[in-house]
Image (cartoon, rainbow, N blue to C red; front, side, top):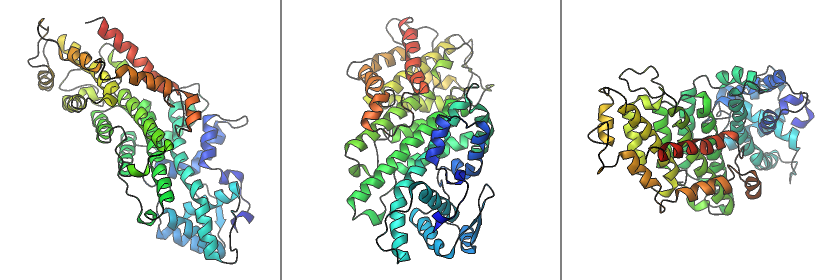
Length: 449
């Protein structure tokens, strides 16, 4: 079988191993070597919806021909007896036949041939081999997404070993950043609504494992979304609206088609982790820190930077409606962040001699009629919002304390203890969003009340 064919070790490198190398490059692995690892894997890394493609007649014919040329130029000979196993993997996971060939060879090289009950029957061997490879396949799916995270992180640090790699490969993997970010959101939403495959209806254990895998993929998609928006893609009105709509429509990821299959401790942790990173994402894309800088906000009918959300009054109104009509305690951090946005917008309006025609309806809407000062008997909209989110019943401080002291997102020991699927617990960027933004927020409000 496959294991008898010798190829370079790099061919068999898994996405799990690749993510580990990118996260902490070992001695002897330089930027050039990492580029060699990434080059033949650009296809799966760039695809969110169909990571390993889908079955194709053209790929099937190449496997049937007995000679397959891989993306890195390596030519593989596929023996006649091996083809049934390749097609079995392709059919089970609905992936491209060439990717199925790569997946199967990598599995056998790294984990070896699993025990087979009847080695004289190719059909039995194929069925049992596919069952044995399932966990490996699902792990590889998760790690194709995770490989992107250290690249996004490196792009923001010119001192990072991976900085030149990120500069070269991210545009190749993700040539259109906004389109990629939207595809991540769309895929996430599809997974929250994905129905259990009919073949699993009579197998509760398999059904639960499938539902958990779907949740794990949702979590890693959210992690990728966070890092995509961290510095690679501008926080445009269209994207910020899409992100907020996804966060609120799924109640921070708690609305799932398969909720009844997700009741054990591991599933509960997945829900909590998804909610925690959703909170960070909705705060992150509001770019609170930049709003405190002079001239960041531009109230203009023809803004110089139309690719930021606060340049669009229509976006601002829709975001305001979404935030202020969802006042559940799980949204209080985002509500507080939006309060700061409204405050900065109002301050900008107060110092503007004439509000542009496109923005006037928004300011009249949030605080009719627009005035430059507020009378003693009428609180400004920002102070009303502050009062709302600081109400003890809302639980803002309890939620923040829980996030900072009990969430795997911020506490590495908790991540280990709970077996969390968070890729990078206690990442500096996560702490920067929550710990860095809110002290600034409090200073601003308590010095201006």
